[in-house]
Image (cartoon, rainbow, N blue to C red):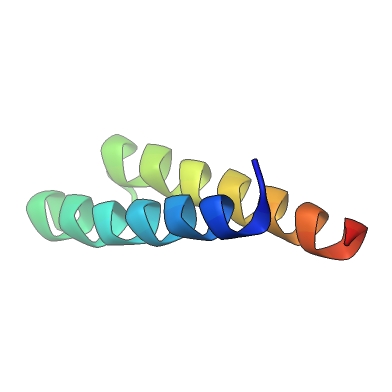
Length: 53
């Protein structure tokens, strides 16, 4: 995945995190934590791609 595509995935995951948090209300809800981890993974991947170029 290149930087541009990864960045799009990051933005999508961020929006989904906001939606999940709004739906479940608690930052400790398992669905919110799960989405947060997905976003973290994507951000880490983006940083790796960015530092390699």
